[in-house]
Image 1: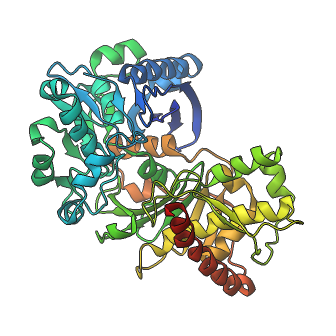
Image 2 (image 1 turned 135 degrees about the horizontal axis):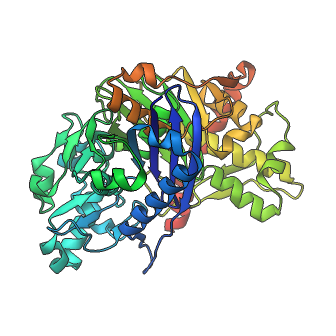
Image 3 (image 1 turned 30 degrees about the vertical axis):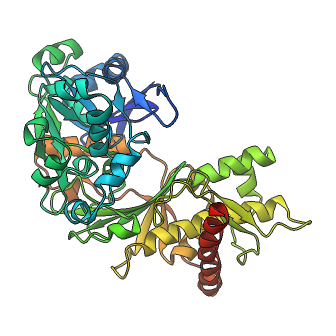
Length: 485
């Protein structure tokens, strides 16, 4: 029996997941990571800490599942996107990695974000993207910039350690602002604009392709067979899509984590950057994906939980499962600014319409409705393109049946809740490891999980929630104007 390992490099932890030929989970290990914030708006990690964490996770799996671990045939990689891991000519990091949620390069992003950049990359150039980070280095750390030989994305630094190869794949590369996303190749023009060349970049592969083999010294260290294949892998959301079987055009998932993500796979490349909708390559060849992001989703329930001093699950559980009519109380979920469709880092949330008898149930419904309307904005950002017929629900917020029923009604789309299991980015990375090691058709590997429950839109409430969404949309310009005044 062959086994497969998925490595997911998250911001707060590295997770390793071992699965069998049948994709059943054999075991997992998680090692915490820390983030350094040396200045306001800065967010960094030491790349060496990723290797230490990866070694610890692999040793833990080996200790617990020695025989199965020794049969690993393929490894897939996933990781947080956009990070700038800057290496010297010797391959050693010159500075801590500047992470996706670092905002120091906001001025450089603004300068780079123009019609030409959007036409090439298909996206607004956000401060979190990789290219403006290098522009910031060029201006503020010129000595280090001049010593820079290579720039790697975080998971690709793990790959360099594992294989000795400098390789990137399409889904992660699309979040750098250096990729011609339609052509699936580095853009010489975008590299030139940021003082870079192809010599600074990694070789590009598809996420399902073999990107190297585990180095013999590491194979010996971990008791692996010679020639273990390492797949191209995927950025965290693309890998998560592989994990829940979003592998064909028109399929999608709804993630209700701290932030909210609405991810849809597309057969063609048709960007709409003006709506702050991400258009990236999928980790699967021949596919792209569009992704709307709201920066606070389940995070809004965490905020309300602290305010009311009651657990989120208790607040949502008190509502039952049958959704009510939209409330008069309105909530803008912009606790940390907003991405899609406003691209507004300065806007903040508001709870509008509080009355003397406003209850905690009314406040809970308002928060859930506000996030649902925000996800509707993400859906509408794609314009008149075909909408997904079903979305797979993942994330902490998917534990609330009320919220999923509400989401189905507001999005006017079936929401499917997977049966218990691990279908996240590490699982998707392991699936990518299977395709790279065996050459299997990705669609046959990346099937959708068994569904525990399905939520259909409540037909007689659709019109009421359309009207609620209209009222919700009117709040943003009013709050924006009040904050500006």
